[in-house]
Length: 117
Image (cartoon, rainbow, N blue to C red; front, side):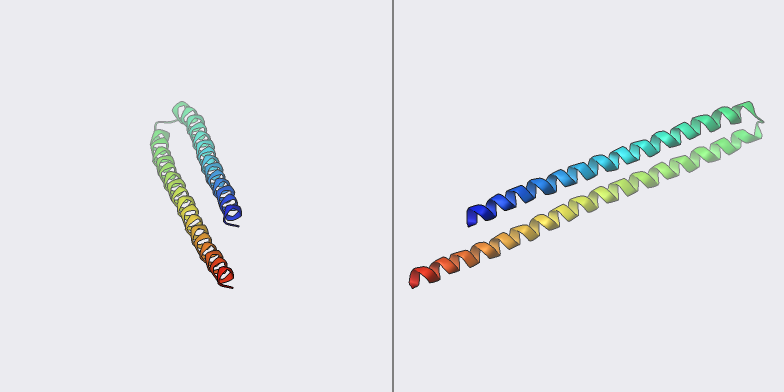
């Protein structure tokens, strides 16, 4: 029974690690795609503004500041999401460890009780 629980725990742990890794990769891909899109938008806007009036260069500078803020916000969100994923994983691991300990103690007690009879 303990072996079965250990196999289940090991498989669950592997699944949780895979989910965490997949989610982290997806978050990075999403962040990268958004960043590329923002850079592309910036490049397109920069070309138009440089062809136009000098006053529009000020608008470009403001846009650059806005993009920088968005990138910083997205990076912070990505960091927060990654931390939340790791915390969730840790919480699940702790919960599973506790369940295993409880079940192991129950099994030991059952074995001891059956040996006494």
